[in-house]
Structure formats: C-alpha cells, structure tokens
Image (cartoon, rainbow, N blue to C red; front, side, top):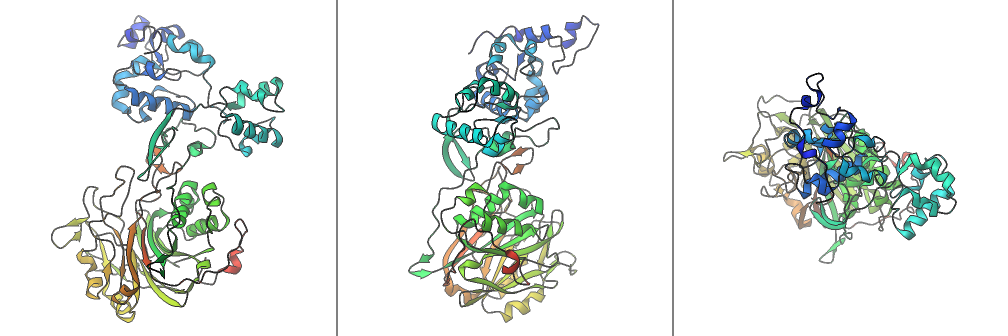
Amino acid sequence: MGGSLGCHRSIPRDPTDFSSGKRKYSAVCNFSHIMVNQERLNINTATEEELMTLPGVNRLVAQNIVEYRDCIGGFKKVEDLALVSGVGATKLEAIKLEICVSSRTSSSQHSPSSIRKDFDYQSCNGININTATPAQLMSIKGITEKIAKNIIAFRTESGPFKTIEDLVRVDNINSSLLDKIRSQVYVQRSRAASTNTNGGLTYTTKSHPSPTSFSLKSDDLELPPGGPTQIPSFRPKVEPPSRVREGKPLVRVATWSLQACSSDKANNPGVREVVCMTLLENDIKLLAVQDLLDRDALDKFCVELNQASLPSVRQWKSPRGLWKCVVSDRATGPSSKGRSFCGFMWDSSSGIDLKEATILESAVVNGNSGNHGQLGLYKALFTVGSYELKLVNVHMQTTHAENGTNGTNGKNGHCDENKHHRLSPGILETLKAEKELVVLGDFGCPPQASELDILRKEKFCPLVASSQYTNISTRSPQGTRSLDNIWISKALKKIYTGQCTVVREGMTNPWIPDNWSWGGVASDHCPIVAELYLDLPFKELPRPGVTVDRGEELSKHER
C-alpha cells in the first residue's frame, strides 16, 4: 500500500485544536507548514495506494483522482476534489480534514509519504511535450520550427518523453536551451491500457483522462494547453456503406435535430467532428436539420466538409463531396432558447440540387389553445439525378417529459406535455397535392400519438417504430423516448429499401461540454437515416484540400 504515510490518520477532527484556542484554521489546509506536513495527505502528489488509505476511496476512485489531477495540472483547492467522478460533496466532507493541496514548489506542505515524489512530479503549467503539435511547440520561447520538428521526430521514433531532461537527447537542444524552456513545458506520462466506450462503441487504447472528469464550472480551473484536445476522440471504425442494395443504386436521406445549434456551438470542434464524420461514415447525402439558433450555423459544417480542418475529416479516405446548405428565412420551430430555424444540407457532387425552398405558413399550432403561432414547416424540392424529391422539414416542440418515459400518456398516445404542438389542418393541402413526399424531423412525440393522426389519414407511413428510441445522453446512451421520425407517402414506398437506422455510435466527443464535465453528446437527438432507391449521377469532385468558392457555387436559395 505504498510507503509510510506519516500520521495523517491522527489529525484532530477539530482544526482549532492546533491553535490552542488562539486561532481558528481553515479546513482547506491553511495550517502552518509543519502541521500540514505531519498530518495531511497532499492530494497533488499522493499515489493511488496512498489515496486509497482515505475513507471511502477505492482503487477506481483513486485512479480517477490521479487522472483528473494530471489533466488540470494539480488541484487548486481541496474543494476541487468534489468534481472528480466517484467523489462528490458527501465523500469530500468525510475526508477533507485528512487532505491538503500544495504546488510542486511548496514542498513544505506535502505529506511525508509523498514529499519524496516532488522531484518527479511535473506541474502541468505549459506545454505537454508528449502531446504537443508543432505549432504548440513553436509557441514556446526558444523553440524554432526546426527544433519543433526534431522533438516530434524523436518522440515518434523513441516514444514519449519520460522526463523533461530527455529533451537534451533531441538534436539542437542543449542544457542551456533546456534551462530556458523548462518552466514552459511539462511531461504527462501514459497509464496502462484500459477499455473505454464512446457512443456505444467499445475500444481498447492507452488510458487517458476520462472526458467526463473535466470541470467547466470551477472558477479556479485552468485546463492544460489545448484543453480536452489532449484526450483523443474515437470514431467508429467503419467503411462507407454500399451505395447499392440488391443491385439497385440508392441514396441515404436523414434528419437530425441539433439541439439549440448556434454559430458558437457549430464552431466547437467536437460538435463539428461528430456532425461531419457522422455524415461521412453513414454516407448521408441529404440531411434535414432542426433547432438552429443561428442561420449561419450550417455553414460551419459545410466549410468543414469542403475544406477539412479537423484531422479526422481531413484523413477520411473516401471523397467528402461538395456540400451546400439552405436555411429558412425566419423561425420555423420552438427551441429551449426561443425560436429556431430549420435547414437542409446536401452533397451537390452526388447529383443532388435544390430547386426551391419555402415555408408553409402556420403549419403548426398550439395543441392546447388552438391558436395559430408563427411556426411553419420548411418544404424543399430537390432533384436527385433525374428524380424530383420533395421533403417537409418538421420541428414541432422542444419540451419533453421526464426521462424514463416514452413520451406518451394514455391509450391515445398523446405527448406527455402541458403544452404541445400539432400539425395544422392547413398542411392537408400540401399532403394531398404531393403524391411523393417525405415528412421528416423532430415531432416531439412517438408515431402513434394523436397529434400525428393527420399523417396517418393521408396514408403516410413512419419508418421508425415507437419502440425505437431516438434521443440520447451520456447517462442514457440507448435513449428513453421516440421523438424523431421519417414519414413517407404511400407512393414513395416503392422506392424505400426497407432500411432505416437510428445512429447512436460516435455521438460524443471530448470537446463537447456535458453539464459540469467534458465528453457530451453533440445533440440529445440521434440522426435518423433512411435509404431510397434513387440513381445518383456523381459529379467530378475537386481534389481534397482545394478551397471551394462558395459564393459562386450557391444559388439564391443556398447559404
């Protein structure tokens, strides 16, 4: 169980005992150096074995503490320990009189058992030379582009650096230069291999700090350079699915509610990676999107797909296509933050082109009052090769029942809401006029709900059963409710392949916030993908990495 732990077990329960009644000391280790040195365990230098001597701390919790500590560069205060997975406020209260925090330089505050590790402990203030990119290395004063390349080459050939002193083994780095840069760099060592999951996908890799152990809410928290970029994201290892089924060419059409997607959210590299890689991995060529807070949010994804700044997108082996988008001129749906827009994305290199896009006025009404709102459905006409495909993009509601229900109440399958929306009878004109029509999006309720009777009356068929959940979270990766769907008209059944998928893998990313943590989902809705038998005459693509002049490519409908 490690070396001698000193007498940190014998610490008095009342910190004022140290003062002989003359002075009250804080329980956050503001004792004299001698007292802390003798009585408390320094959580910034303690080993897993030493941490396991604390009440209620098992091996798993100890590992979480060490991993979290390595990521944030050391605890700033005892209370930060509550942010570690498996600790929390209750457990912290039980152990905080037996622990303290101190920096590497404040060795007099260390516990006797962990003070000897001060010479090995590297403060994570600066650049981690085991994960830094050439650009990050060049930000270090004294490191030139040539030296940065030498560091990367040495690291690739010899493996991770074990100590900062190993840098002198790199070409063009001597002891003098090392002394100049020492305070700007640190070494974060790897741990043993472990098994992890990401979006339902299981994989084995060298253990890295759990994305969900990072805190976003701590005012004193200073993430390492690059923040969660030091945790690799893992995408499902897939090959692009075949574009042929039973000898017939097909196209994959999808719907995805992106949960209050603003421009800032779309700029998040984790969100961009999840959205763009999901489109590529599932060979989605036409996507209906709901819940956009900013009209230019979809532009971010198109630019990423067309110009590829993220490594995972850039390294995609198959053609990425030439993506365009269009967004409604005004709000068409509700959102947790007010009103939202709907839009479409499509790969124009696949022979898909937009002919027109319009808002169906007052197509959604409040289900309780019956009053028409300012909400509408977004209808678009696309040419897919020689075929004309009409889609109606739906976003009916955003407030849902508590997790654990499927969103229905009673025999009629009503949405379990105080306020819900329903399709207006005005949409009947569109449904009756268009024989071949796809109605898709976030309906806010399962397909058997009475709010959707109007679709059933016109012989539309839902492709996702009510027993198949479409929401997702890190706590409920398999979902609890059926909210999203794709409905096709009777005439379109002849081109439906019978394949419709709720995509759950690869929905999380270390860059995405998850309440107080990192590693959240890009949206609390899963994308729904349906296959239609349609022949796509693929156009010649520009070479990967070539910038596309989007201003000349987009028509008046497109953004």
